[in-house]
Image (cartoon, rainbow, N blue to C red; front, side, top):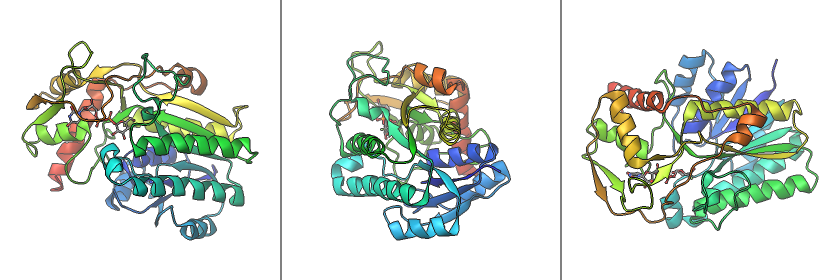
Length: 344
Ligand code: UFG
């Protein structure tokens, strides 16, 4: 029997896909989520895919008493994957206190509880935002960290520093920090996927909603960047590939596979795609047109960033394998499922 894993934010987008992979790998999971940006139906989706309904506690991770109760109710938690965080760059500029409180208090509570309850390791969701606008692409884990351009990005930088300080101070646990590039797509079953509240801020949900006719047209933010077609370049990684890396990271900490108590990995494909290339990839893969127009640049956008994922490839034995066409089809199948269910 594998040890129980606590997944904070486990009904969210990346969290739910990771719960599926953990359960497929034989880990019992307990989710804690305050449902601020997700809902209970996600548990049904996870159950339909895996045949197992994960244990679920509706509570906020900034509430340490709720976390203590959870540890009392579900003994034997040996690993934590921390997805519970506010994640919208733009919103964080408007509500910095909310972002610092949610993201940092959650982490501090978890670190306290880990020491108190003998948890072996924590996987932390970080982001390529920590590199800011890099001088050179692709970025490796040694690429300099630049000053964060948003409170959201700053919470990721500070969180990485907090984990490092706590472990260097002699904490009796390990950590794997995963720096995600741009997660996109959905589970191929279309049972779970991304479901943003309100008008989507991110490219793919806006694109699929436009393709569905929910939005009139997609705005491409800028075509005057220093890139081959003038639009911004990102490293779009399939969410299921990304989820699988978490299982490897947990396994690695629980089996003491690494000497280092703290490890950092870039999780990307290694390929940069421009916004216009991604629209084209979607249209080619699905045969569905996406009405779009070029508009001005979006404040705060990075021109180009993509990963050198060699460290994760070599050390974790993990690689992003899903072709972008399949990812675009899964994103579209999910949007179609939302329509079928009358949700979108
Ligand atoms: N874009 C458009 N039109 C839109 C939405 C986005 O052209 O309607 C463009 C953006 O300008 C950018 C690219 O699509 O060039 C990707 O934008 P997203 O908003 O999808 O993603 P970001 O790269 O801005 O940020 C995302 C997450 C962050 C995370 C970051 C890096 O939103 O939370 O990736 O991990 F920190």
